[in-house]
Length: 469
Image (cartoon, rainbow, N blue to C red; front, top):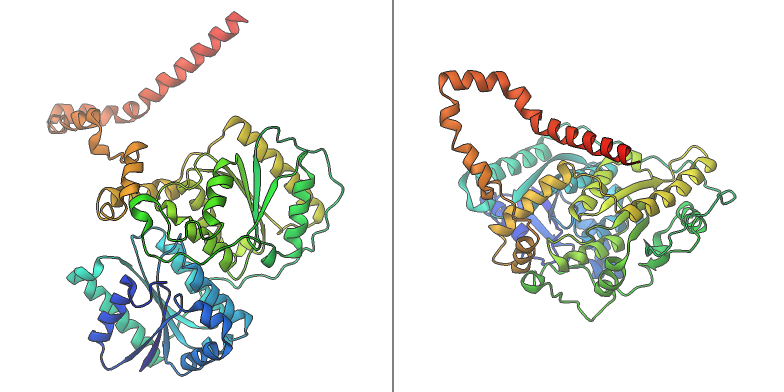
């Protein structure tokens, strides 16, 4: 049986992801694993139709497709994303339709689920029979149990291809655009004052609705925001995965294009950042993804801490909750404040007008008072994974991350809190019969006793203020 392996690593054969494929080649010698280095050869595939068509015909002759990729910023690499776009742009869906598919990724389990959700959604949009995903931690191949799990995954995929197993669609097809937005008269303008506001967009993939939304947003401001158009800046290439930046945050592209200067001299100095983007398949454009991937010169450090973030999106975001989760997670990981996400999924143009006017007001208000929403599991869980990896497995390579995490108190392991450790010394005594019963009876009161004290102090403070008035 022939399985086409589409490799999403920019490092090609010299990648951890391919180590897992090579292991499967050894375990299943009776099957042909035809490896194609997609992310590494994307420019040739894009510029030479003959090379692209040859690949399509090879895929057509295969029995199954294995999408194999490392994680890049909660998704796949920008070059891999571009390959997916080419499939749709060149109407090659029929090549993939009816074929069995599976996905294999390597990562530190940092939002690997969002990447797998994306790939399954894409496979289903292509009419493929998606069997399952396998998310490997980078060092899993070293463990016997993990190797057994990998073999089981491959066996299940192979048997599904051979037996034409039934698969069921998980993700809804994306809806088509309904509203043709026509902005109405501008209301009162919001004044950003001395606040610096930047809009990042990409005119090359901009829909008509997004263009109108962006125009309305600018008109609602007393002073227009600066616009950075990714279609006009120089991006020398996607992230190379070379990890050269790990030691001191120096990127191999430094001095060769506009990416780092935009992050350092524009975005990091802004108070408010609005990303105005059009959905392309189940994400945004590959160029946007490459720009985002290239922010990895800052490795695992927060990219835009304390910034007020907003999104203007044209596209069926309601049908793609996976993308919404990516946006929420990105803000929390970056230690930024996500103010709002406005899409063109409105019933009327007047409704969207009001949403956009309120959007600029909220951005300015939040920036003025330095508002920040509490983190959810997305930010807290992500921070703990990074913390553990920066202290442990990745510390040798990402030394600048370790220094940053240590300096900013991000190595906040609970066992380092002396008061907590002293409290834990009482556990053996608490389990004694009489003490145990008292603790069990008073646990509910103990849990909120400190909170009651805070509330009482606030009441007294406000009473004192009233008396002074």
